[in-house]
Length: 406
Image (tube, rainbow, N blue to C red):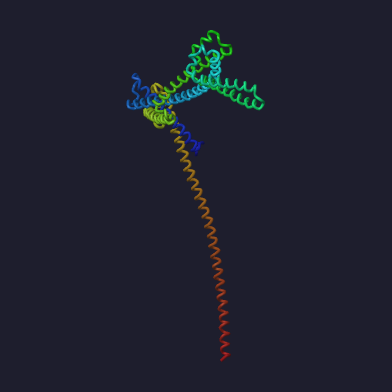
């Protein structure tokens, strides 16, 4: 009798899939109906103004949330890029400064020694510090000359002591020279903007090696200026981007703000789906029954169904398929109940059969027991007769014994 070749679990899965497709068909139809409601030229389609306005408000809010999430992500990405650029530029700036400082000390020391009269203004801020060290050098040099003169006239052992003193003063000279170079290196002197140095360069008074150093310093100065300007631009843009994040409430915890927008989008989508589904379902009920039968007769034309014919036919088709699957499931459930009752009958018949066999066995036991009873009763009768004879014999012996004693 069971003509269904599918199990209930399989049918339930089909039903779930079809119901999902029907829900989606309602949403698509409802969405189209609501959108058409906004068009003044569109005829009334049953969607209320209240539902349309609610749908429109939700769509506007969803657009705002989506754009906000995108802006936050883009701004965070841009901040990361700016941080990366800033680090690269700072590293480059640090390397350039080190390279400039290395060239600067040697270059200024050479200019100071060879062209001080032409560059008085350049070294004026440092004159006092440098002169102090130069005085030390001058003093050490004079002392060395004196010691050397004494050494020439001294004996061997005295010469050893004087040599040590000379070395000590030579070390002082080296330290002062090193200090002068360090003063020049760490100074705020701006070689690139010095008109005095530029004049030396333009007049070709610098030796090739010094000229090359000057050109390298100018190039490094340009690189430094470019890097500093770039850092300033990055800081300005980072400030602008950070302000945009602050305006979106995402400057402190972007992830939390994105999660808030994302959760709200999910809530909005659910509400929009409910409105669209409800509108599509109500409109479909004007043309198809719950079981998918057309209210306009079998196989209605597209003209009869109207401008939403494709949407309606899809919904009607799913309704009919769902109805068939539900009947199929109900049929399978009935067949399961029939099978269960048949199994119950089989179990009862098996019980009856077992009981009948038990009855036959019991009757046989009863018959055997009755025969055994009769046999036992006969034996009892024989034994009683035998006992009575014994009693007589036993009683007679007693009488004779008593008579003899008397």
